[in-house]
Image (cartoon, rainbow, N blue to C red; front, side, top):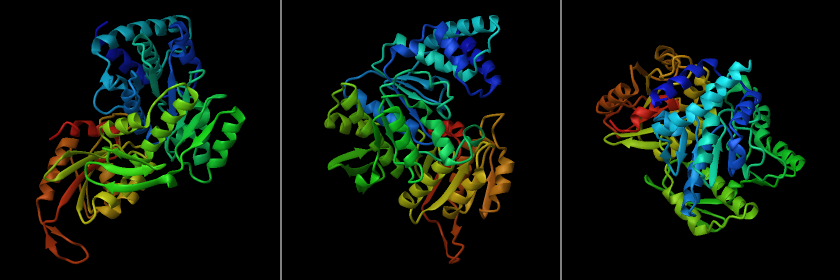
Length: 437
């Protein structure tokens, strides 16, 4: 099987869509020898920040000398980004080899009259098989959606579970309130296994603590009041946490919070898993951590930023960053969203900081909201609304607009003030922007 054959195989399986449940993935893994049971897994669920927390944690573990595998979903730049070891992607040859084994097991299931695995189930099985073969020291495992019924939720005893920030998303599958969504996310927790949680909203804390008590799982919910930010610069943020000074290169105030979760996971591994990760290794890892596509500057003159904010929690964090980093600057938005997202709320949250939006259609035939529909909705909030065929074309249009005179709506004063182009809305369309203009 070639890489092209293997990739077509996965794309064909995508036709099944999302099928929550664990029976099919468990059967598939059983036929592959249950590779997940041989791995040291740290499992994370949550609405926002999963990838950022694990980016920080990966670099901390690497600074401590460990070999770290990561299974990531969704991805931005290339399909093989899903499977990484120390930030190096799986090769096309490895993908074809692993897919042949997993595809053979899946075909055997079909021949036996069982359900054929979904694309995500195939990918998850591939991940476990690949990381077992590569003998990673740790596997940082992200849920695809939810937790309880997510295909990744087959690890009997992870070293640690992690709950990232919780907000509204995927309500069709997870429920229409935060309590219900949290319950689904907490489905990854295991008896006796410590759980590190992002600081939860007051209303959600009792449910988390009750679940930890029920499972006799050591609870560690982060307390962000112990953070004191000492510097916010264009290239780094510095803060003091528990009396120690840390510096991160990832922009955005929310990255401070995500990095603190990673610190607590490292401490958890020291307490419960026999690791010996020093404070200096934690500091070194945090400073070195990189995570593309998350409030990342990809151009200058004018400054161009991209951010994968694609739900309410993400947009609220992005708005906070806009207020902090782009004071007294003109903003031009480039935006594309999926039709199953609460894009009207996105427009409400982001509209106060810009008068101009350029709409694009994300590259996803089934889920993309057409640019014309987004533009129509945006006209209620923005003075200037345009459409573009691609993200690259939209950024070029934004750059042209940045070099024209601007009339302040309140004062009527005409000026050519400093402009920032900000692209956000869906991870699927910003990848092409991260490699420059």
